Image 1 (cartoon, rainbow, N blue to C red):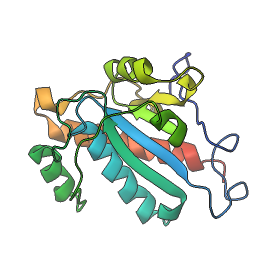
Image 2: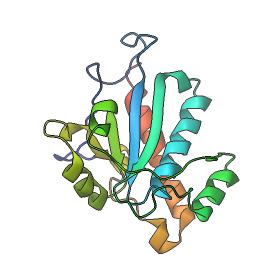
Image 3: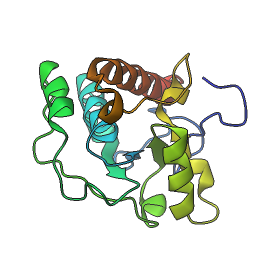
Image 4: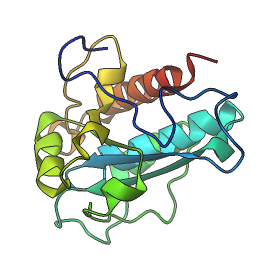
Length: 179
């Protein structure tokens, strides 16, 4: 994890990271993954994270979704190569369509996690004052914090998968490490 001022903050209605002793049955950590178009990286992160928390027996503790910073792909389904990559790992994204990030998302979601610095900049343009600490980048939760390269441009969905998986595993570990 980054040790500089870009280190992610876990922002929730409770202080600190998740712990079973500090959660009640009605509290759910709400995570919104964000990328440019909401058809590749952020939906991959959404469905990978849903899969990880389900396999950990913790699906009821989280609400997870994704959104775009742009309007270019609104209403479109997950890009076919991203959908195929998820399907290769037994993860369905059926029914997912792109939606755009809104200012009220900063009220609804505890964590808004972008894929690269460009996403972060665009997220901050929409972010209401005082909510900036809810924004982080997915790979900040790994041992190699950096931008998650966009497979729309690289066509490298294997690398995107590996990065998304590492980021989501790191995020889940970060959220649950004090238990």
